[in-house]
Image (cartoon, rainbow, N blue to C red; front, side, top):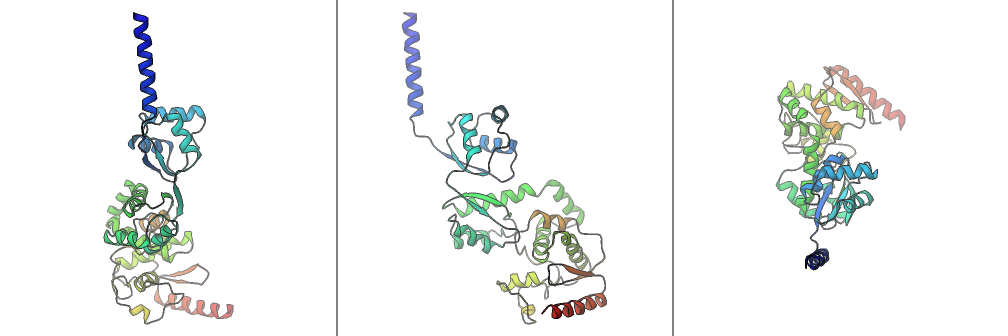
Length: 314
């Protein structure tokens, strides 16, 4: 009798497992961002309900020698997937996702157009969502993996969360030290991003703008004028500098109302940590490099010298 009961229980268990395996498996979306650590990836999978134990997942990764093989991407995984199967999924590729690289310095309109070209969102809808919530500047430039026909809210949320992950508590403390809020730092960083062609000049350009802000001078950034015009021009005319817009820093003192693009981490750091210099002016030499000066007389000399050099090149 006891033996029959055990056999019955085993059969029932087998039937239960078989029934469970054939049930429709709900899929959850898990986005593992570029540069995420194993710990971050395991917690993302756990939060989505895919993993019961992040620590067990990490241990299995270590045993299988795949700790460094996790790939960034958008995954559709069933919460009933076994840990070893999850490892196979996240170390081999992406599910139903498009790779989209957002360069540093892209504005919201450029990002919307690139996302639409990849089939991720409708550009007009995405831009409307971003503008309504004033997310310009917070759409962190990075390589992402998005599902085709994603929601504008979902895509924007991923990019904003990546920005929030990058803007550390130490950076927030530095804002306090500078007596500037996060929005002002991000706005300044966006201007630096558009003005600087060379990485080593970012802190120098930042110093000029910080010095001008302290003296309540006009920032006179051509990048802000271009943003106000809403189009790119190789050369600004005098009439362009008169454009009526709060973003025109030739007509309005201080920082514009918000970021003019979405800056990368180097420009954000430059805004937070300007070079230790008294320079008040800079002028491009035409090759991406700039000449910096403290006094207006020096600036005029640099301007004249640059014009002569450019004429000789022609």
